[in-house]
Amino acid sequence: MKTVVLRYLLISASIFGLGISAVANPVSDYTTTVKQSISNSPQYKYIGFQLNSRQMDPAIQLGRLLPSIDVGGDIRATDIGGDGKSSSSGDISKAGGFRSIKGIVSLTQPLYDYGAYKDLQSAEETAQFAQQDYRTSYQQFLYDTSYAYFNLAKAIKNVQYNSYNLKSNKQSLNELESKYKAGVADIADYETVKANYYIAEADYAAAKREEKVARAELRKFTNNNDDVVLYNNDFKVKEPSPNTEEGWEELAMRSNPAYLGSMHTKESKYYDYQSATSPFMPRVNFEVKYSPGFNDISSLGNPVFDRFLPSRGDVSAFYFGINLTWNIFSGGTNYAELKKAAYDYQSSEFDMIQTGRVAQNDAMYAFRFVQLKQKEITSLRESVAAAKIAYEKYKERYDQGTTTITQYFILLNQYYQFLIQLNNTEFDYIMGFLSLYKTAGILTTKTVQDFNSWLLLNQDVEL
Image (cartoon, rainbow, N blue to C red; front, side, top):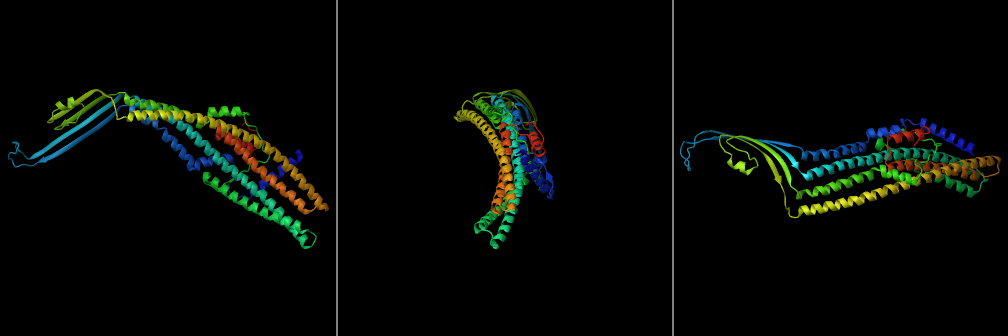
């Protein structure tokens, strides 16, 4: 049995080698394709700039706790024209210009702003969430690119298998049609073979359409028409490590970015709740103000000082002091905002719990899926080997005249169907493995390199 399997693998490898050499487009392996996607895909650039944008939030909130300097001024020139006569008020209007200048330079340093401090802590947690959200999007991007790559590889193989099946059915139809016309073949056999040919023709057309769609899907990421290196038929089926459901569930709870992000969201909502209590507390600022002026004054914000400032001639004023603001009541708005913040925090807490459960369940499902596909691959490889032996034996019997050509081509068609089924199952196994890594939060470019060495180079890689 081992000898037969090796023969099948060698034959398939040679077929794929011929298929690759006939392709005019450049050929890229898995690692190269992912690198091209990272360089060319706008989706990857989007998630990168989105992360950079979100991580500016702490700097924005920090600005509320740092000193602020404001500068303002006003210059006016008025031309007064008069006839020298007394005005109604008794003043004598004189022709000439009247200039006024005023300016203000103020520095404000918050001494106590509970809300601003809590908003800063909330923003820091939001930035941590953004980092985990980036990991989620990045791993999904790697998974989607991988899916497009291996889906195209699967589609190319299925086109090849269906083309061989179509050719064999065409040959069967031609031979039986000749015998039927000669009167040495049964009409039932002839109609059966003709129906099988039409089915094979439809399967081949469907496979070609799937390949075309798969190429377009990969082009969305790479922005080129490169072909792909096909993974080996004899790649070694590996066990996930750790090899237990519990191990992957624990790994997911430690590394799953969605779960870790929900933890940071919960902490952010807690700080938002604390910030919502700040309207019930005073705000204290240290203020320094300088107001130069000529024939005009600028308000220093202190009504006592402003009242005694002269309004003519050189007017310069300097003020420093502490400003305390305490909003005692704001029409009930503050209480409503506090209650809303409490609800937001409670909802984020339950969302974190639910996200953790989903991560554990996804890890369990992905692990079981990989195990299932492992068993299916083993069974299908044995079925392919057995089907190959069967059709070869019937080929010998047909050559000896002890069986019909119909039976021989039925077995040959069954062999190709097993190959297609095996090809689809191997694709499911590979993507299930990558899904397991994604769920656990450990799908990286290092994973891509390891899978490239394992599947395409047939190297023994420790996963």
